[in-house]
Length: 209
Image 1 (spheres, helix red, strand yellow):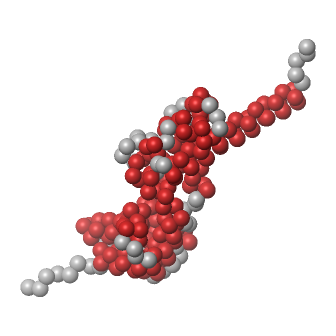
Image 2 (cartoon, one colour):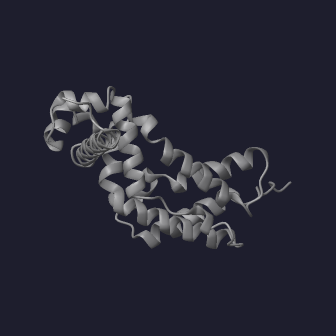
Image 3 (cartoon, one colour):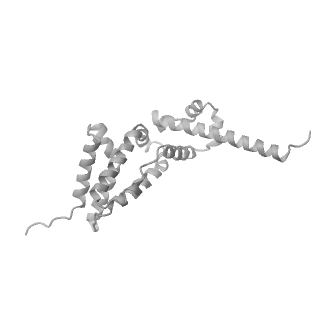
């Protein structure tokens, strides 16, 4: 038998690559679904393989380590569930209006993604690969806090307090405590947390002599 023509070999290689990409995506989607339902700590390779309809060795072939699988899951999840665009907030001159809009959008995002983030944060100290997978969210929140600090000048210790209040305001667990656990509406949570940030940003009054 003669060897394959270059065109046919190119076609076969492309078909194989497409099949591998589809399998990799199926495995990633299966792991993401399990993370959002039962949580990372209970998601093992056997469960992922069963959900994806593949063998365990196929999972390992595509993702030789837990860290590799979690990185793929993180990228896939944030692509499917993009965080609010904080560049839209930057042109708003009034820092209170900017903060209120930002919190409303981020809290709405948390409402949509609560099952996933509840499981992930719960298991973050139990599964080593979880923390690195949260890096996109942590980087986003840090950048968002910098955008929201504009117009709230502070120095030294007061700046540290202001920044701490902003990071607390943007945190998923802050939102969850106020709304899910204490039944505040999103609007009530935004108003309360905005007041917290304003108090943290206000100049410290000198005590009367």
